[in-house]
Amino acid sequence: MGGRALNILSVDVEELYHAEYVRASAARWAHLLRPRALEGLNIVLDLLRECKAEATFFFVGEVAEASPGVLEELEELGHEVGFHGYHHRPLWEMGPEELRDEVRAFRRLSRIRCEGFRAPSFSLDLRTAWALRVLAEEGFTYDSSIFPARTPLYGLPGAPARPYKPSLLDPRLEDEQSPIWEFPATLLELGPLRVPLCGGFYLRLTPADLIVGAVRRLNRHGQPAILYVHVWELDPKAGRVPLQSPWRTFVTYYNLGGVAVKLRHILRRARFTSFRSFMEREGLL
Image 1 (cartoon, rainbow, N blue to C red):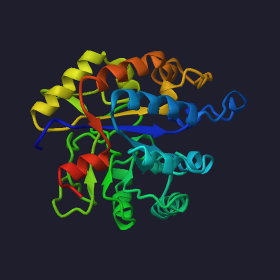
Image 2 (image 1 turned 90 degrees about the vertical axis):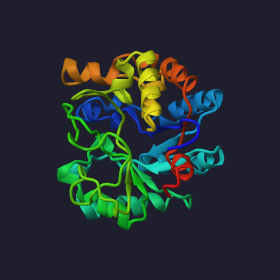
Image 3 (image 1 turned 30 degrees about the horizontal axis):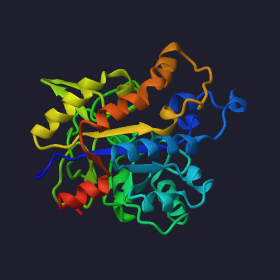
């Protein structure tokens, strides 16, 4: 992949109560949770403007529906809009026609071009590989739903840890005839180990300079880093609710106050853009 090293940044535009561990407790604490995705979104946009970076914003449909015009505004600012499920339901709770219905409902919200998808909770695995065919049939050119390592919540061990064209039957396998590209979450590969550091809890946990070093290492090998954040991670007023275990509390809330500083540090030391811009530059569209 030629030219100056270019990496990919994405932002999941969802509410705190969409997060998987919060979702399990949301009914009990609904009175403490209010929609604030736009507040977090504006914080992210200010940071991107400051650092002269672009990003792909994967929107939950109900968030976009509640904010008419926001998708068009992002496009006008030079960013890209992708789809993140209509109600942030993981693929393992859905079937093919439910996903298709959600895709079409999202596209009815706006006339802007939407070619990318990220499954809630990185829920694309062997059980839900059917989603790739639905996405291809609905005109998506890329997906970023695979986490190529096992975690307590999700993961697809054995999948490539770099952009590739996945088999529609087994997304661990490459298929050059596939109609869709896969951009898996970035991992640091240390021999046989795959260490997550790409976003969310893993970005909050990993020291900023280690992330920058991993980005540069990937770039030296001709590969982009693919990082992500959630808008609620940058909103100091997003609030908190009690969760079901100390582990879930740690994963969801650890170091939220440091995300903006860390992201700024990374964006000032590496070049980031949207999936679409990256694919256009690399001739993948």
